[in-house]
Length: 425
Image 1: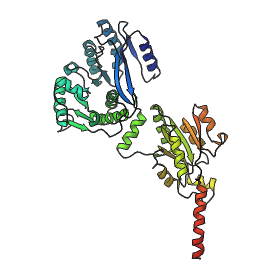
Image 2: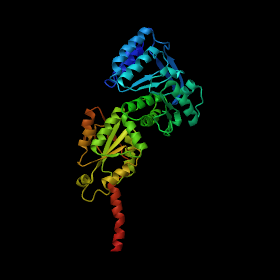
Image 3: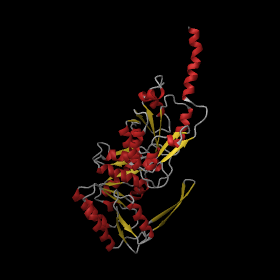
Image 4: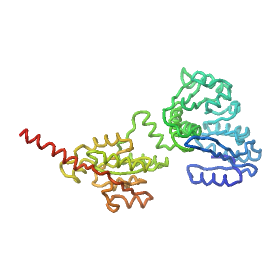
């Protein structure tokens, strides 16, 4: 990441924030003592943005600062997989810098993607893709953008001016990709947004170009990259504040969109999914049991645990394990049947069937952030509690709801069968 900052406390805060993301992010900051580091302050009331105040210096940077930026950029472009130019119209993207980026990227064979703010899209000639929003496309072309046909017409003009493919973000209407010559007979592809509750649109445009660029860099087609970016944008607006979208969230959303979300997992698959969730900054909870007759007490227990974490994994005893623990008359339902019922609950994100009598090995493999059991367990009786706490996790004992018992349900069912059997005899 390369940019211009001031010599102020905000720049120090920015450096520290990005340093915490190392080595994933390397920050090449050029300091300009005559500028202020751009700060956006948002005023929010009841979840709605009321006002944004920007503290900034938006005049073009001086030639000496531009030269310093170019010295930072040129050596690293060849080592990157893609170059993203976020032109926020704050004065940092001057012509000398852009005219350095384009030939350096072309020599290295790297795609260039631009999030544009200028009205003159001809400035960005040489880039491979532009990602304007609907308003930016209208401002650049002067054309209406109220429906698919209008957006296609405006995108075709923008593409002609910039000589780049155009991915237009259209809020609740999704996106339109205009890439004449590479999309077959129809030069435009309209990608509809997935309906979801919108909490905050802050950073949605950045999420789009970041995902689109990462996919292009990984070898995806523009169509597949745009579809991924559309899914990522849907995740982003469902969060509060300018939040990053993690790879685990994206994988889940893609699987759900394609109807192939696999949530009954092996231990290895669950560990991999847990790794993705951790990268996404999600808190992962774990609980376990036989659950061979799922009753209301179980459901309330799982709901309470799910309230304390972002994702909940349930460890389920295998049939052989249940027999060793409960006797030859159990389980009542097979582990696979129980798993299907558990996965029908909104609170459960994954189920892992384990063969051992205790989930100790599974807990060690998953290293959950939260380990939960019902109130019929004491802290010293909970398998894995010491390990979870030693690794910075939390142990939760959930108060049980009275009146629910698997054994009582089985006994009652067997008792109700006795008169019928005696009568038959």
